[in-house]
Image (cartoon, rainbow, N blue to C red):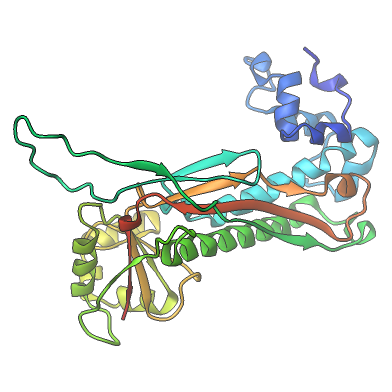
Length: 332
């Protein structure tokens, strides 16, 4: 195995279908460094150390440090990808909405569906056992590319600190996370193309949101669990104003974790993907599948050659319903 000091870095490493970190780990496994001063660093971080590039903290270098030679320049796209991915992770709430993530290599993917009747039925001795029918959906999962165009000259960025540039890249990641959340909400409400729009719950009274509406949503989701509640800004304000939301358990949870829960135990998530007087209740363990075609992609060749003008940063993902009855919408 090569050691991190003598690996030749080049553009071709980005053409393998793997991230640069994965390629470097295959050439320079981290397990070889157990018990050494480099333990805890992955293969990419060891390359940053090799070229003495500090990407954060008080001694953060300027972006120009990446381009001191051709080897270190090849690290720049991976740094950009990591910073964007960090922004996605910080802003991402899909982990509280998505039941499973499926990674695919192409652009065509059909999910599966099954009948929604999972209610408990008594089976008499000698009778047929109820069956769950699983089938491939008729429509492909719609995949969307979400991202931003990085428009800047190298001369404008070369003397900027790397950690400052990371803030901008993280905001690109945050935008991608919000855009994917909007795609997820659209699939929950309107369906994934397989004639499966979200069922509705009637409000107790028009124009106002009450605790009785939450009870109705809990009942409508049965036998699925009501463990996640998505709310627009207007609906979030109404929910937080309920006296039932001010109980001791909800208050302690918010003070300890910063996360709101309803008295029914559902996590309360604010999203700008919903507008007006709308909320969605769902069982996060059964409602939605996220389909991902690759990780963060970017124009690595432009970044390496310092041609930052109009370099794209994007992710491709889509969503499919698993159980349609595992989500309900209420408009009041």
